[in-house]
Image 1 (cartoon, rainbow, N blue to C red):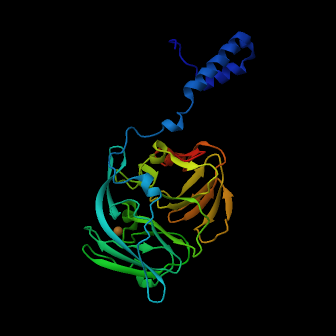
Image 2: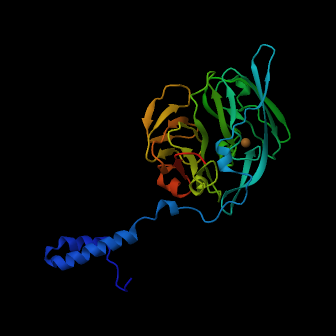
Image 3: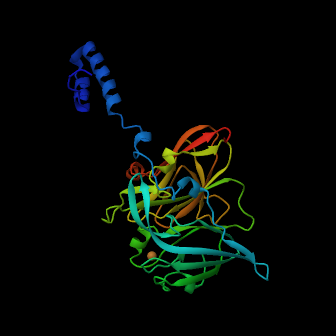
Length: 334
Ligand SMILES: [Cu+2]
């Protein structure tokens, strides 16, 4: 680079408008414009990321993506399947970006909590122990009796509560603490996914769970870090390898606090949307889906081209603060 001052975009435009500048000057201006374009291109989004790696291996986004807790399974005398889940509320520091630790309130020491999975018609029992110093509950979305709703029966530190209900209807549901102030209990990390499978299941697919979340690291009532499955840029640094031609299914849940709207946008493809997962017929075919807190969708798609494809929030601010990942579409899985 010479020491010459770079032209601003405005100066270039002005010169371009002056026809008297002549061909040579125009050529110069074009060259300068090209240089400017090169220099002023936004950073390659791949490089919009964190530096270093998360050292706390107890939160593994890649493992979490495909981890389902089917509970302890037994059959009741009438033939009904009983699934018993154990959930403990514990306070724990979690690493949400390299070197960034967040004092979380967790279900079973992880954020999001375990992905609970049952089949429609199962009897679900959740033994909830509050081992934290704060009162908490588990409020499940889906259908259940009023006293199993996890709102009025606050579970005090040291107490245990048994939630019991029949899993219905099939769909993509969620659970979260419903103790006031709720936005604090949710933003601290007390939420998870609750899948109720249809009795006859869904078509075979590679299944993934993505819980969109964020973290208020300076406690000002706004998020500084955004993600799916907690760790900022986790799937950008370590792309999710999927197979070309294989049906992909994302159970996408939005648990983001403070921000009113979140979204997912998929590059190079479109997906079928099963809103709340409560129908086996898709209601939409698109590449961007918007969600407020608590909304969730089952997304299905198949890539017919190999390569790296991005997925991210289409709120660019969230994307650049961590809510971004990549699918590495390959011909054959290694
Ligand atoms: Cu709580």
